[in-house]
Image (cartoon, rainbow, N blue to C red; front, side, top):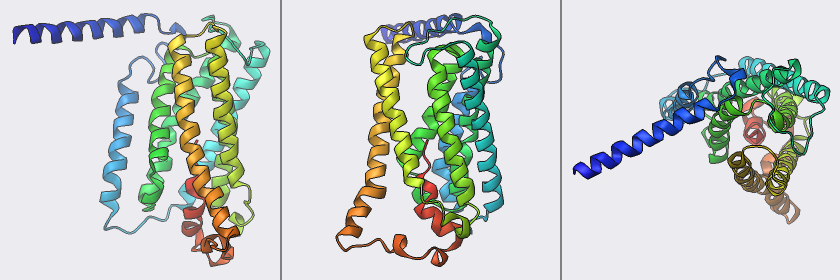
Length: 302
């Protein structure tokens, strides 16, 4: 028994010492920034998010769904503006610093444009917390079918991973995935802001499936860059490069499966005489934004 206690104590001590060591190599430029110094806020919000996903639908089971049209429009427009700001900041600053899109080591310098990139990356990290609102809207509107594994996995992990980014590597090659993803989110949130305005607007939004294609292209590009960074020994933390590759593979599999179910299989059924009546029905027959959302809003995942 004593040996077990000693072994456990030693393991905990080693783990704590490793944690202190990781803190010692964290980027000093972001020290003291909101929610950066400690993992507790990020982990705490993530746990609360998962509790919301588990408990929220049960609390709403015997309640009427909320009409959140105005809130959804405001939320989507706000997220569009925020992601636009992030994308522009990263593009301008990285261009002025002549960043490489293939491999850009972290330099840890206090150059004005470097700090501008770090600031934009922090906002990108913070935007992942704001995206929890997407899930809250699903729950309050009783759209439980949209709380898929892909949706929850994506939202809960992105927030945690980008805390690692802002704490240890807030510049360098970190800028590229944040910039590209923010640009795509401008398109995504613009689409969902318009779709939330109702069928009269939503009937003209024919391009939703191309948003998923853009996401798949983004993940594939990130995967290729990650593999290349490993092969070329790019001066960037090795474990982060391997994590990126594995993470992108998981997204390609999950989003690819989603795309196949949402478009390819439905298209085949329609072509061979088994049409999806919800897709063939005129838009004015849809039950305002709720029915449209069932065929559209859940398409947002990245």
